[in-house]
Image 1 (tube, rainbow, N blue to C red):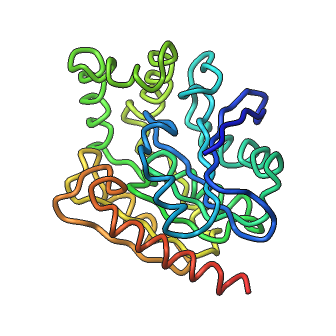
Image 2 (tube, rainbow, N blue to C red):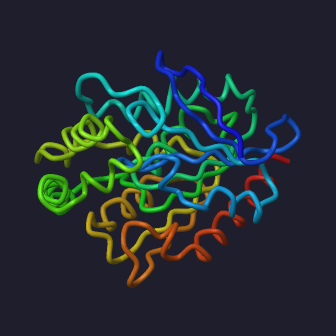
Length: 261
């Protein structure tokens, strides 16, 4: 594992790589969730590298982990910014011409958006619990997260990964998705534009819900896709159902390699 820093979207970001990135092989790029960073993947990047025999890259988005602290709040448009020009800066810095994206939650949704924004570079997407669409159940789930942050010890747990960025990180994530009008936010147009193969793995016990996101993917997606909803699994199938997730990633890699010739 190697660490380096780079600039994307005008901010200093931290990244880690497992294996050597070159132009001969696709790179698995990992996009973390809304309260996460590279360290919360635990040993998953190494296991993906061992399983796929491909280089893996994970980076902390602006405001997270080892990257620059967030200044000000966030609008819902941050997902389009992060998956469009910022992700383009990352591809350019590392010289990545072919990528398969592995995303979780917020990062799962951004993986789909990045596939739409960078169709020549993104060969496939494996997304765990991608929050593609919202309903009032999910909005109410944000209030449960707020209570856990203020009174349930969540803040202290997050500080292990984000340090003094924790407060700005949490409120920057919570603010855009915690009001009722968030249910009108959509990425249907971008889903319809994705052409690479996609695997989406949901947990049926997800506190944030999963049906609206799965339905949005099925209703608007025109790509080759597989959608799985696992009983007894919550918001983190990448940890609680890792074998299922890694098998899905392998299928996406085979399909992506076949599609790209």
